[in-house]
Amino acid sequence: MTTDINLIKGLHPGIILERELKKRKLAKSRFALSLQEYPQVLGEITKGKRKMNIPLALKIEHALGFEEGYLMMLQLFYDIRQEKQRQHKDIHPDLSKFRPVLFWDTKMDKIDWVNQKQAVIKRVLERGNDQEKKELERFYGKEELIIA
Image 1 (cartoon, rainbow, N blue to C red):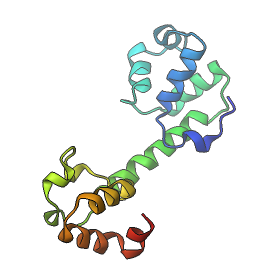
Image 2: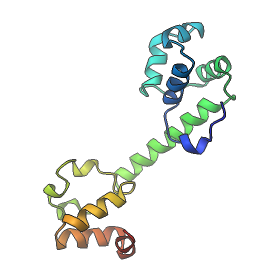
Image 3: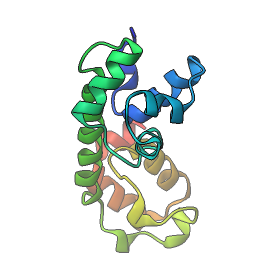
Image 4: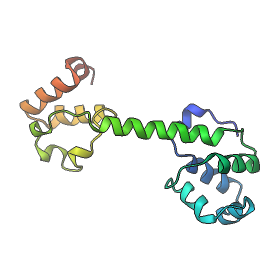
């Protein structure tokens, strides 16, 4: 499989596996049994509920003709992305300075203030009051607000 890894970095390897099985018109359960694996394991992996492990990755890569280590590399990039999201979760402005109505469509504690910076800035600049704009400027910096 020749795919630019940068295009799929951060995706769960199960998503790529699911797409490849559909492309080849292979049933997940039969494919799993051909690898001497439980169909439930493969199903959980393709749904992103279970991590890819090395022995299974090697079996799948061999059966589908993928480059060795491809699925585990995807798993690693996925794990890195998940960890970054956990770390970013604690980075946020003083939420008490924002009215809940400003983010009416989501819970403010669930917002990824780092990765969703552009959307947050746009919303606050369009609908926010002076206190909210000042807190945004304190958190992101004046330069970020000017660029947006």
